[in-house]
Length: 281
Length: 335
Image (tube, rainbow over all chains, first blue to last red; front, side, top):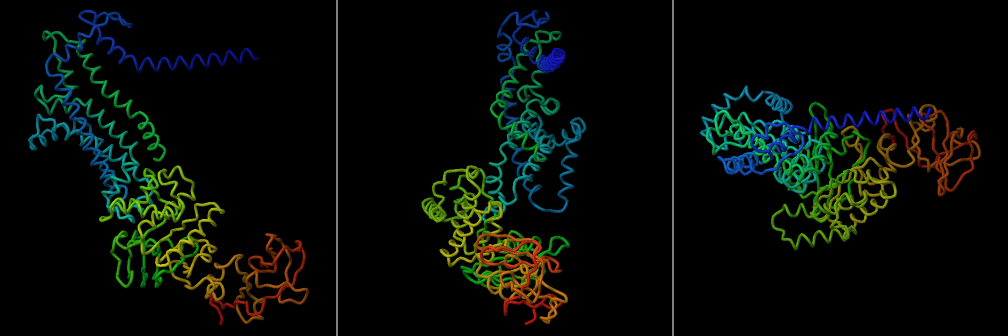
């Protein structure tokens, strides 16, 4: 009796860890293979191997020496950072109004904001293009900042609104009695309490802006204004018929590093931010 | 120092009228307690005085000046909330100094002195560097009171400040608030509670509210001795006043007779009423005997010292002379 019980327990354990290994392999393999390929060279790339066989940094040197990749990297940093700052500023102030100021049509407005975010990028592409041409910011980083902010705001506003709604009303009232203006309440009382939510939404906005491709391709035309995703896609090899996989992989790895660093820095805050938002609604 | 005058104040949330025309004067330096059952509008009335809610109609005057549309911070008030409402990310010192840092014309040194003076008054000086989460409930409430003192207000508003504390702390903090009132005799205080013991012990005058209207205003002893309705008579005093109506009240020429437990004598025989003991409570210094005698609720008799009555005993009782409250059919006293 005891033996069969132990066997059953063993089978369950084995099945459980098989499932774990399967999930880990499936989710990690693409990244592993990209890193592996980035260290390969020449025709080695087309020989399939799952373990590192050779090691060379040539691809990484090529990325930085060739074309305007460093410039593209800076563009990406600039565009993503400004987008985050702009989106958070607008979203925090909007969230204060939507969660704390009673006005007619507040629920409707929240629904509209949510509805706007349901449109696929491609649907608004031509309209947005006209707008950007009219504003005279075509082929500048501002075109991307403008469009990314528009697409990030609905999500950011929603998350921050629900988070702010859960902050105790008495704290705000105490601040009002203390003589705080709405701006002081937002910056000195609410923002410090909202760090987890700000970090989480800010990071998601940053990742979104960092990886975005379609707008970046459409709203820029010269090498010097492109962001990294487009630059990687347009990397060209020695001839028209050669796709420089090694360099592409190296560039991709380089592009991922800043995100990994950001996530590691804010890891603790993200976790608490996600649960705080999740539990409180 | 400020007197507060309310003239026919009304407050409606949508179609629901919560305050239905309140006229009231709070005198300078007075400790006024709003008391009443939940939903009577006492907290709303306090929030109207604070300016956190807008008045629907009527006039609110501070020292004879209309303040209807004045922002809370311009009214010279400070408020202590039920949930403390401390800023969680600020230290105790920052919490207490926050209001002053927002006002122009206070230099750092002055702010520090005022915060430390308030902290000394409440004995929280050793906690100034801590965050609210590192304090107990009683300490937090003291910080909240300290934050209010630091602002040096003309009017102090308390919104059920003791209801989140446990019984022992509640008594201790109540005494502290009473001492505070004595030491700040030029500050007008308005205090909201549903606990009539807090009202009786703290108030200079009590305002009993019911359904958005003032039922009676008076000193604690006035309310205790001459309540002007069955409602006030039943609300003030512990244990609750006994009400005897119908035939048993006829000899007194009233619809309802109210008599407090401490104003009933147990007599050997031939008393005004008689009843059966259903329960006794011995509290040491005094004891309560619950009698079943056909009234809605059992009649409570309060006796000094312990007693030896047992359930099932038949007891004769008589009210003390001059301690009977007589009410007519509308619940109003017959004088």
